Amino acid sequence: MRIVVVGASLAGLRAAQALRAAGHEDEVVVIGDEARRPYTRPPLSKELLVGDHTVEQCDFPSDEVDVEWRLGAAAVGLDRTAREVVLEDGARVAYDRVIVATGCRARRWTGPGAELEGLHTLRDLDDALRLRAALTDGRPRVAVVGAGFVGAEVASTARRLGLDVSLIDVAPHPLLPLGPVLGGRTGGMHRERGVDLRLATGVKGFEGDERGRVRAVTLADGSLVEADVVVVALGAIPNTDWLAGSGLTLDPGLVCDATLTSVDDPDVLGAGDVVSWPHPLADDETIRVEHWTNAAEQGAAAARNALAPPAERTPYRAAPYFWSDQYDTKIQAVGLPGRAERIELVEESPEGDRLVAVGVRDGRVVAAIAFNAVRRLAWYRRQLADPPAFESLLAAVAEDPRSLGVPAGVAR
Amino acid sequence: MKVHVDMNLCQAHGECVFAAPDVFELHDDDSLTWVEEVGEDRRAEVEQAAQVCPMMAIKLEG
Image 1 (cartoon, each protein chain N blue to C red):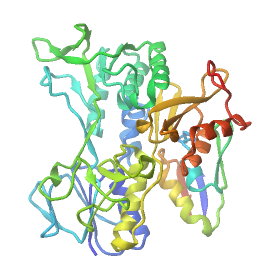
Image 2 (spheres, rainbow over the protein chains, first blue to last red):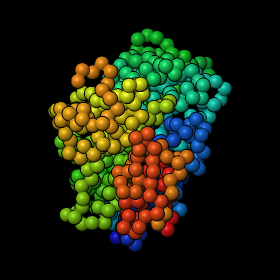
Image 3 (tube, rainbow over the protein chains, first blue to last red):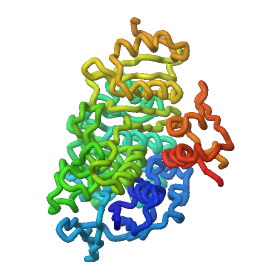
Image 4 (cartoon, helix red, strand yellow):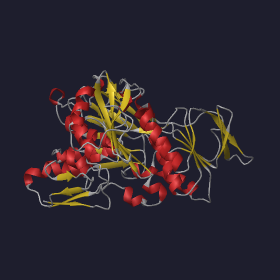
């Protein structure tokens, strides 16, 4: 059985490794649009961008993975009748089963000023090296549009480089899915470190100089933010354009069942950012998760399922985990904060530097978020296997001698 | 097999503790300790721990 993995980043790599680990001896082909072997992306907004890590330190060990690498040519089509993946160079790669792991791309700015030089997005290694070159060329003023995880991390890194930074978002606080309390604290963290925060205001466009280089961001409230380097961090779009003619259901992610198998074709499976699949924490509605651990685990899970007949495949139901490093705060979360109706602070150290909050939906805990408190988060993570009612979780925390303490200003 | 963790890379994500709770342990100060020599019966979970470490800090030998 010949298995083709489309996408040569984390999910694709872990899929290839898991196929071999499971004893699959037939052909495995891994197709990637970038010419490079797989590398890890979290450092691109942090350690690599600031200069602490080299490019080589981002490489995943992949030499020992016995597969055929087809790198440097993107997949442009999936012909399910011929059972072939079509590449941009015209080549056709035959498959018996295919694992779609094409990830996401950065959403670009398409409004006024989109053509200007000095606008960056950050998704792959080349983006990061271009941005690093721009940030270290003199002392540019930096504007980051979008205060999500990537935007907030880039702002933090640019401050570490000693640059003047504006962080702009239409939302009232950074990290929207984490809610107003944690988002507000994150905003405070950036403000304390000297970031010029421009919140609750959208971007109208970008102004350029006579050479076509960006010189300012124009905001919806009429104000102007001067900038030599702009980082557009407005989220990501799943790479499923190449599947448009395949007849597979796209939402725009590849819609799969609980076993990461396409709802239309048992020989097509998916892994990583590109997959929409039903999750128990989301009441079995489909979700898409754009985080490192999800890509790593789903790659392996999809591979094991690809080797099994459809009736013997196992559901993938791990609670998503993600983290973000900003200044000296490590933010870690499990579950689905974005689906919570409210985020409630439940523990906090007296110094206020460590805390845990939970996301609640229909009275049930669906997420936990920690600032500098990984050990505590582990306890919450175990609870999410069988999501408790918010009140019973509070009672358990109140009796737990390891709790960081009652948050200031919370009557309990 | 021998388990090495590069503590210069480790950022206490705790993923290894989830994958192999008998081998890796996080402490109250968020520091990590681990069993350096583990038996064959732990191979699968330790390999899983190495694969899910976001910092690629876990190396296995033997």
